[in-house]
Image (cartoon, rainbow, N blue to C red; front, side, top):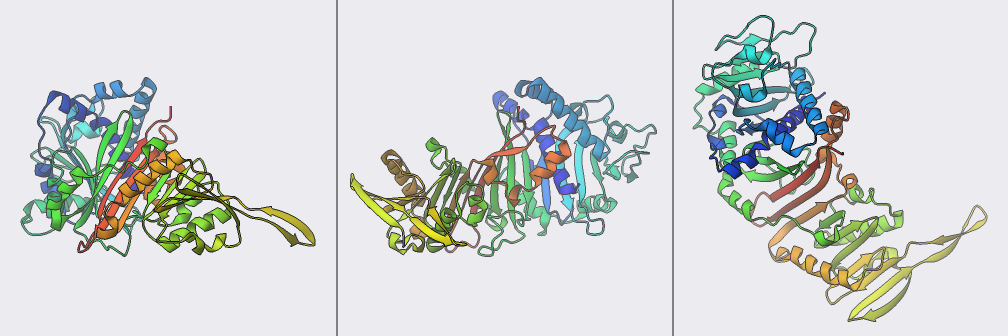
Length: 489
């Protein structure tokens, strides 16, 4: 299993355990340490491509899990925890996690081309009077501060091969001893000189009140950000915050430009991408379908309809709203931007129109006879409906009622806002159908679910995103929410 997937699993597990404590903090008004000032940061070596960091307390883990999950799911979480710890090579023995862990954790990953599997570096703080023996539970005692120790478990799997305990009780453990050496050497690096440490720390300052944060500057698997139109640099980071909503996992992701960190305040006032919530559309995309095949392949419509949607999308490029629910779809756009008469696929269709309340309703139909292999065959094309208002065209495979026209018109102009005048990039997505959003952005889900062997079934309930950019901005504004269901009871 690729360690990238394992890292995601570890993060999920830690969020299961640590994430619930945040509610207790807000209720009890207990102050938290600034996550950007954690002492654990001094041990982070250079060239981190990913970083998960947490400063959440674990004192009420057991009670929180009992409160939020059914007994069956509690047992499954315990099994997941034990499985992950066993894979890593950690064994707490008779101790509980809260007996040892002391509220600081960092996980980073690194490429290892020779092994063909990524290496991981895990750093965490343990409580006073606890040591390496308490987390490895070996028959022979091996703890010795300030000494690099090789982990050996006879006839047992342990991904982590080396471990080190500092005098201030930080455990540094890794699959590669060079990463531990690099972490120790980083203490002596002048951290006032620009390097990756400064970038991470500056980014964390913008989220100092958060407690579980994942950072990466690898955008290759993000389809919305992996675009040559707005090339990103190593100082740009995708920051993901882990939170819980009931028993579901909610991830909020922000694109942060390190050289413009003060601008991150704008994220606090962002609209939360509520596209036609009242109608509960499974797919809602504004301002371009990106790659239409990715979404259309998951809707049970015929090839003609798909080609029609693609033709309109390719001609407009922007300021287009696409809605889909239960295999019904609807396209809305400014009718002055692309005349209906220019749609080539409808040129030889029959049409019939009626007017009602200043709106013009048109149905396009086509019945033909064709000769194939000396046989006459009848073809009935799917009917297409058009509603023309004062400003908009509504094209659909079903007749749109007037109540929806008013609602969608308001939504369209709300989405458009001042985008025509200000933004050359302004896309918004709201995807509720899990089958329509299993893109390569979430390709790790199958690997994680396979690893857990159906103990849990991590699936996406909803994905929302905003990406926009105006001149003279060199990088886009990006915000996304991903709502995961953990258990399917």
